[in-house]
Length: 137
Image 1 (spheres, rainbow, N blue to C red):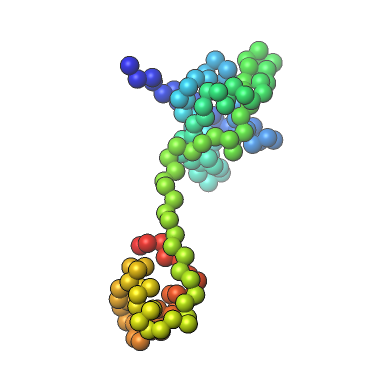
Image 2: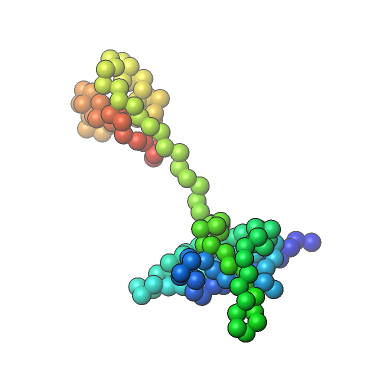
């Protein structure tokens, strides 16, 4: 049987410490945290969903409210973002201005720049090869 993931909504962070407070009775393994606080413009300040392991959450200090409710105070920076897309690998293109025209062609082929529209001679390849990046697009 699969464990059901529990979503905990936080309406406002603790601004002084940039933390959130989660009631101790709500803590569980596999919890999903959403901070739905919005700016004046209506945009969420902390978009997306976050998670933290139960063991790590239990390691933070407890604050007891006047009502008797006990909260674990967890820094927002210690939460793990769940929906972050994987980072693109960036190829670093070195400064190869001292290469021959044939060597420029080999480097361009290796990097996936076969033909550039409107390119004449090796003007554009030198431009591309001077320490710029190619995100593989």
